[in-house]
Amino acid sequence: TGQRVGVGWHAGHCGRCDSCRRGDFFACQVALLTTGISFDGGYAEYMTAPATALASVPEDLSSVESAPLMCAGITTFNALRNSGARPGDVVAVLGIGGLGHLGVQFAAKMGFKTVAIARGKDKGPLAKKLGAIHYIDSQEKNPAAELTKFGGAKVIIATVTNADAMTAVLGGLAANGVLMVIGAAGPLSVDPILLISGRRSVKGWYSGTSIDSQDTLRFSALAGVQSMNEIVPLERVTEAYERMMSGKARFRVVLSMESKS
Image (cartoon, rainbow, N blue to C red; front, side):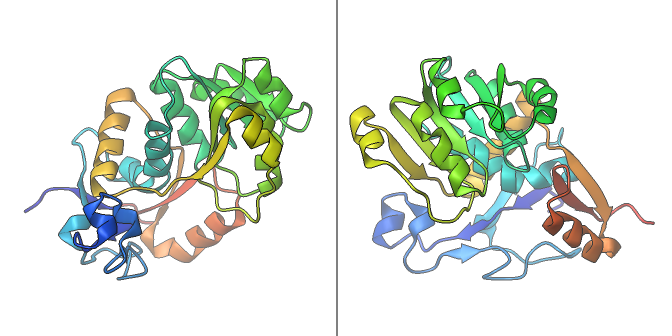
């Protein structure tokens, strides 16, 4: 009682079906629960959630700091730590937005040689501030060619929602490299020869379960990973939602229960 917890996207699973018994809880075939779909979500002061959905929040993280880490944070953190990359490997983050600005931080803090890719020179200084050792402006240079100058990327985390942008970086994967797709885009065009010749692959990654959320929060508190947020009081929720949907927020919109205006 009284303990601060967060509720992530993955809210529950049956634990008995073949997928669950193999540890693939995201693929539960019987009772997959999703916050905001299976039951009401977080645009409220109170909610009821299954115990399986709860993640303990570290004392040194505020609720406002923790909220985006339970969504964009776990998605990027969990994809990176399950990507097969090791400290010192070249890891590229495609896109510097709500997901990408956290992805760059996590990649750098995990010890990867982090390269950020986005459109426009203006994002370069931010990418370096977040921990990238190099920034590629995909409007000016061929991102695949630039990545090959580093020997190719072991992993590219695609956070964008543009399939053409993903296709453009595939040639920058090193042998056995993986394009990890976490941004929901349209149909993706892939050259089979590119995959076959270098044993490259394209892989999607699901967010994670409550323990993954908890690990994300703990790592963020330990390593100093922070989401860049626009904080809006709950009574202005409609305005906050419109701001989020406009794509102009930098980078996450967080509803606060405390602030009043």
